[in-house]
Length: 246
Image (cartoon, rainbow, N blue to C red):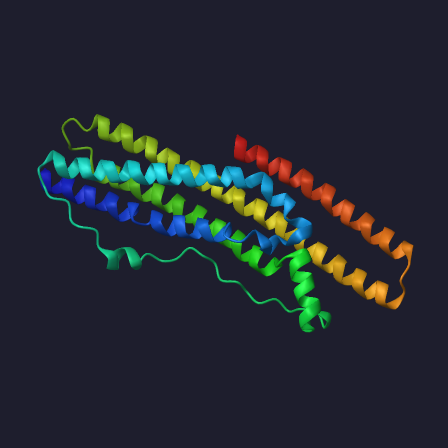
């Protein structure tokens, strides 16, 4: 029996070490707010607090699993294996690569591109951030499923396993909840990416229009289009924030 429990502890530990990839990927997607540009950075402020709470919950669940693993080893007086840095380094990254975007002819001019980047952000980086959130959500879902399978296979024959099942059940549900929130963050980031891309296109059109035929009418039309995009995005963000809160 002790050998089975020790093996079970090792399986839980194999899931716990994968939380490091979640933490690293989460840090990447909020590491640089400038990717949203000066004109659109305001839309991401609403979710930064929730993201911090998400990170706290990830750390909390990871610590719970660490304590459970240590407790199982202590129960039978077995020394827990030392952390394996090679094994931890081998955990696949969840950070999605940035796919290069085909820019317009105007964006091939260095100074103009720099101004566009500063004002309107980097849509291709935001798209990678959204993909990273979906990678995180999928990884968390898989972790919960694996832990549930370990419980179903290993624990039924144990004597006095009720408390372990209760604790692990709470952690599995917490990981599933984290997965759902990560997916919602992916949707929010995608929506913000749409606004950033549209704003970048509108600013580019504004520069061209003012260069060709400057007029108050040109500015008014572009301002109206930006307002329409902003209202639509606000409704989308409100809906997604309700998902995060619910």
